[in-house]
Figure 1 (cartoon, rainbow, N blue to C red):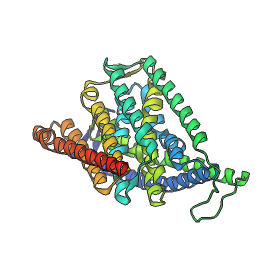
Figure 2 (cartoon, rainbow, N blue to C red):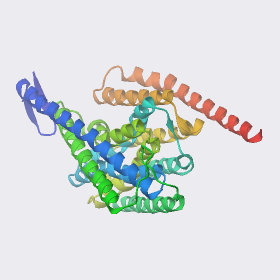
Figure 3 (tube, helix red, strand yellow):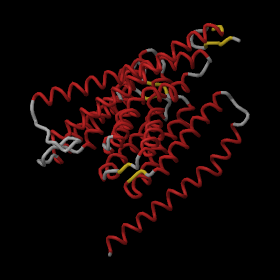
Figure 4 (cartoon, rainbow, N blue to C red):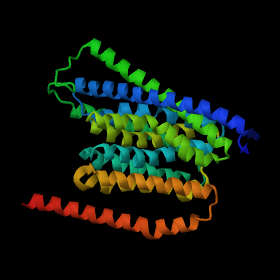
Length: 382
């Protein structure tokens, strides 16, 4: 048996493939260890700094944690843009945003129902939806140009400045306590320790995700998977592992605002900063394939829109909604695999999803949203 590698135009023997697989497994294990350790350090340092400053942990999740855990996406997309691999650069951002909502929020909600802050419903989720639609508009001519990228990146700066303003406005002077209930002193020593935890955590997260992405891409290319599918799945999932690790650890530690804010903040940052900067520095911008325009970007928009009714109902993400998110990511990944391999079952899969699963989901979300709205009105009137 042999494996044809489309990217390097070489043939791998079975012996070579299994030899590579052993090193890949070791790399995966090492990457996972770094991810878990890095996430623990990052969440601990970020939540402690939030307590010292007296600012909501949600804003820490939307900024420090979100931007930090999105650094792998930034690195991969910029490198891919310079290397002329536009499908990986774009697929990384689009796939990461889909993965962040469906997998990360799904798994986190299974661990414990997630409470959703008013700011997310009122401001950040609408912004995420808006920039997702803007991606489709900019790419509708087949290219996200350098001008488009510059506009997106300016948007990232404006959004960050607004979050800093919100943090100052919401800052309070209440006594700051750590998880054990003991007061945290605002001393240089505490600042140095916790900033150090954040930096070390980020370094471990980035290195761990790099090892996972490298090993995954090696296997995918060896068996001939297309660059767009690699970008949408393996690279997207790999570069999103810091967000996954951080959100899961934050959920377990009870920092659920950080868990949700990390995902929403990362998605906004991915489009405005990662895609924006990648397009701005690329000599010819980033080309947008027909497949991405017709399917993947619309899926990203649909996933962003789905957050609004789910977040609005009860201002929480319940376990059954987490299961719904996970099921839809499984369906999305299944479609990509069937489409990439031109499988004979693809038409039947599309028929079931379009004719049955998606309509039922939409109806369910509409009904639960309307009921939640009616319940809130009754409480206000009573």
